[in-house]
Structure formats: structure tokens, C-alpha cells
Image 1 (cartoon, one colour):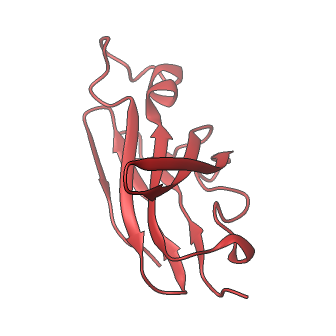
Image 2 (image 1 turned 180 degrees about the vertical axis):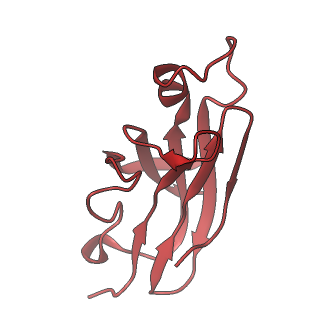
Length: 118
């Protein structure tokens, strides 16, 4: 059984709060193929209630998280014009080790960043 798992969360850096209610989709990437393996929504703390990729489904490889940030920005009144500068935010990353990966998104209407957290 794998020891690895994947977690994520979203922080609204413009408002200084966790970003609740953001839909997130996780895809496994192989060449030009993307296969959706999970979908969830952030809770009041901007986190998912469970790992988006739990240990029993963990495999090393290339993955992509897609954060549906535009829906959140519109709902919180931060959308200033259409099309939004940031709408669907993809983050592609590799997991080479059988360990915990944490990939957060720091979000504002006109910028974002990510990193490998702990």
C-alpha cells in the first residue's frame, strides 16, 4: 500500500481569508492524455475535507489540478470584467516519491502562486 497522498487548499490573498466553495478537479496526465480522477470543493477553511488523492489511490506520476477560481471570484464580487484574467487555473506537477504532497493555491483576481507545501 502506498504511503503517499495529495492535499491542497486555496487562500484568497486579496481578502486575506480561506477561499471556500472553490471546485477543484484532479487529472492524471500521461502524454497528451488527461484522465479525471477526482473532483471536490473547498470547505470553509479553504481545504478539502479529505485528501484529493488518498493513499489507497496514490501513484507517482504527472498530475494537474484545475481550480475553478472564476466562479469563486464572481461569487465574492472580485470579478471586475469579462473575460476574467484568472478563471480556470491549472497547476501541472510531478510526484516522484511515495510521500505527502501538498499543492496550495494563493489566489487574487490578478495573480496566483503555488509551491510544494508540507
